[in-house]
Length: 258
Image (cartoon, rainbow, N blue to C red; front, side):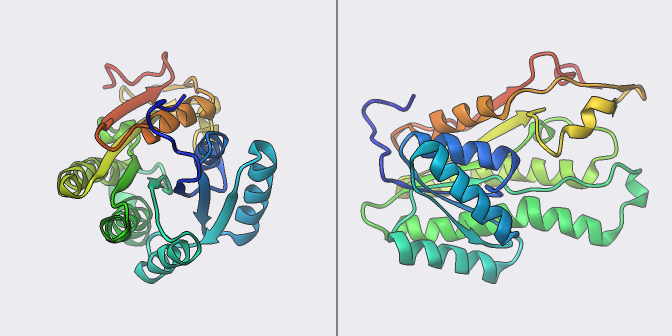
């Protein structure tokens, strides 16, 4: 439930990676709460199907725009499209991201490193940069940015150097954006998610390598729980901010990892 003193109805939200998985759940939660939601991703057919389904499910306005968050020109075109259609942006959820191959650090190829950095870190930076430009210039000014950090922003899994490095970096970027946005009514926070059921966590049912060398299955949670957390963060007035929040499966081996 959003804060009763802050009406989000009709406000404009962008969810990157919003066509599937966690992003789709976040977009659904925001739309159900009254936000006008734009979902972005690289696959046009997936986005169009998701937008139509979400609009039917929530009764809200969900539209889509293809974009590669790791490409500056593509991100600029995405925000230009939002500006042209809606005239402003009130919320950006930087959710898009990928994992890396679970192989020893020395076997990770340079191309894969660059691909993970582009999706998980450069994409967050580029979307934050464009959001700042719009949010500073619009009237009324300001807005909110929520970054998907992952619990790997705190502690790594084995064989996860590219993913973990980017998620640690997202934490620094979140804090910098929170500081730099403060004078312009731009709030920035981060949600660290642990084992929400998605395509990325589907492999966990067959067992995941642990820090002690054992392989074990791990519990997951419904993405709807994450969506509710994002809706709460998004629904705060701009004079309040959740800087960091962790939402995870209670019994996952995170606290005490290693």
